[in-house]
Length: 583
Ligand SMILES: NC(=O)C1=CN([C@@H]2O[C@H](COP(=O)(O)OP(=O)(O)OC[C@H]3O[C@@H](n4cnc5c(N)ncnc54)[C@H](O)[C@@H]3O)[C@@H](O)[C@H]2O)C=CC1
Ligand SMILES: O=C(O)C(=O)COP(=O)(O)O
Image (cartoon, rainbow, N blue to C red):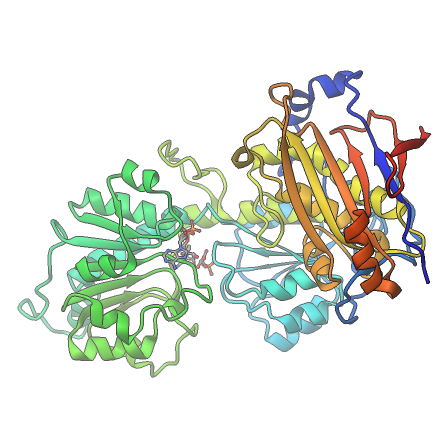
């Protein structure tokens, strides 16, 4: 029977004897992430093989053969392709599968080999993808599990040149360690303006009257419209686009209410909009404008039941996603007169079938997914600076926004617009940069120091900080610790994207604890401690009991920077821990 492993405690005490540790936040807060090549990047390592091993009750570390890498070779400082396993001389291949603005293409060409192949079938995409490091798509390309499988680990980043990522299989991307980034801000105004354009043209029958005149008719009585002023508009989804639609609708004299389970009430109040429950919004509205993402929770949320609750003669605008509406139910609601009109930019299937009854309906106005399609949004050539919209970057169109994100990700930098990796605001990224490097090293160090015939079942990360828990976003640190722990003991490719997923798959539990301490102002974290609970896999049940009795924790503690000593402590049951080695 394997004996329980001794319980070493590895401590890096906080030694504030270097300038770096006394002024950490100042020193590191200037570290840029998105636009600079000098930032401290978090790598996306090259895929080796994706394991098909079944999930495991503990994480065996017997075969841990990898050694702690130096700061330079560690995966946090890699270039294209990850940990330095691929050469810088090889330019990455970037496949662009839908039309992208020239400025963005130029940026990509400066960095890699760009292959613009539009209108690829799924089969052709799967063939091509095996030789690509990055793929850039808009809403017309379905990036399915098959695509990730066909990539055989070569694909490191998928860039969605726009907001909605419902056309990318995020679960598959995560499992394959492929980062997904999007361009969430550059088309906000374009989409909001298109929503307003559809709202007004629907109310005044512009499209129908235009078609009628072009057919040689003059039907002034047939196309009498309805006015917008004084009417109630319900904005469903009060995010970036929704709030811009609300702002514009107020300018048209409409009463605006909104429904969004996650939007802060003060943001709505700031522009004079009341957030209300779903049923209240749809039953009070004369006009309803949809701006929520397509997710399992929002799919077909506009159903027969929902239409039933609306005012008779309600009018609907959809520039979000076709899938949030049950299109058959909408057709029924239009035919019964419950819904007077609809204006649709998006469809469950795009393009919709040519004989779609919805598209052909007399009281439906349609556009072919044009919400984001303005020159300004795509190319970033607006001359306006809109100060009231902090997220709106007038210089960057979608093309530049996504090209920067993809190039940054290929360089191994943390992407502020990552969709399937810990996504933290740029200012938090800069602040946590040195801690992220350290957190990974701690995980790596801890798992290797406890290696020796035993396994680990759970990990606790303890942060000592003076900050209020709400002011300390630890998702990035937790992910880096996880990566550090999993990578040395796994044959599969691990990066920030799939570290948590792989840990779960291996049955490793990771919990966090924050301990309030006094710390110098500006220092987000005073120390990070990683505790691994040990357990020989073969004697899982017995060890489990033993572990509970004796609290068999291994700890690796570290202050925020690499300036400390390592003190190894051995803790034996019933005895106070004592240092056995210092270095
Ligand atoms: N037609 C087009 O060309 C374009 C379409 N879009 C679509 O518009 C959507 C919104 O874009 P943004 O405003 O930039 O995204 P966003 O993320 O800023 O806003 C989405 C809002 O929807 C809310 N939400 C989530 N679930 C909800 C639910 N069940 N009910 C109500 N609200 C819910 C979120 O809390 C968030 O505030 C995108 O997901 C995309 O699908 C965006 C740009 C262009
Ligand atoms: O950004 C979005 O979510 C959009 O729907 C825009 O789609 P597009 O890039 O124009 O295909």
